[in-house]
Image (cartoon, rainbow, N blue to C red; front, side, top):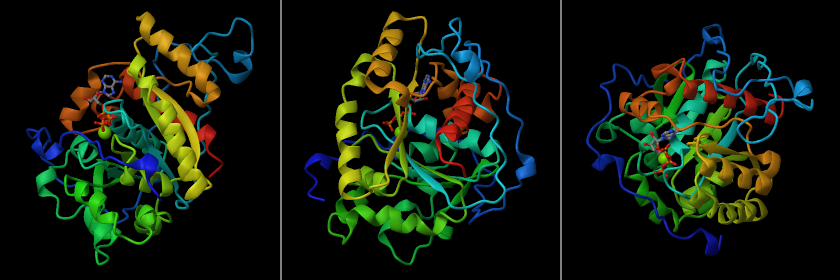
Length: 343
Ligand SMILES: Nc1ncnc2c1ncn2[C@@H]1O[C@H](COP(=O)(O)OP(=O)(O)OP(=O)(O)O)[C@@H](O)[C@H]1O
Ligand SMILES: [Mg+2]
């Protein structure tokens, strides 16, 4: 790709420079592709977010309760269990703006999908390594990372994938080493397809692969988009967050046109929403008027529980299992499953 629209790494500080916030792990147990017991699926906990949930039929009624996006809130059905695993759908969690909830959404959507019996692989594709740290890994103690997978043909997925501590969910970790890949890949043949090539053997083992992108539209993000079936755009409900979305849309369109014709946008996810402020509600209104039904009905509210869960090195669905944050991501998991083609 000529790269006009895709230049500039632009990522922030490295996780490896942060004080260690990870918890000691007993077993990141390299589950090359570990078994998943569907019978271990946790029952879905009905959402405790403030909005009443109504059925799709009810939602058309005049007195239908409004959801936080200003549209009637549909009922998302309990997804059927999967009969067999494989043929994974690959989704990039992407927004070039920093700190909008990409990593938080990757961890918690992944954990919620795993609760629903899906076999999930999370890909940390950010040299900051926040996803890996957020799941309790120490960035200094990784034997091999996605960097080795990308740059060294001898390294296999099985050498790099570790367990996430959550049943049914694995992790391809990353650390600051990945920042070198962005530079080195420039000289590779088919540089935009490198991630797609290395992930290919994983597709038959997982139902869903979520890629946590770095906050940039550089070559790593283009690799993620090229490897994906679709994109989820987490977007902080804050005015400045709206400004970069047009550029992101252009990038997605370019990748679709030149590299990956099947690429779709699954949805835009409003994060850090505070329904008490006019500002949050106005941003949501503008988002819906610009993006329409692409905006997920599910909205993630602002709560400190997410930072606490990061410090604990686990998803909010296990750290604070009955919190509104956990319920919101469980609802999002059901909503995304209604948007994807039948498995
Ligand atoms: N709904 C929320 N309410 C409150 N805090 C949140 C919420 N979602 C995420 N956070 C916090 O905001 C910070 C940024 O979130 P996160 O790391 O998920 O964003 P990101 O888009 O991945 O950032 P980056 O662009 O740096 O990769 C983190 O400290 C996280 O704990
Ligand atoms: Mg992140």
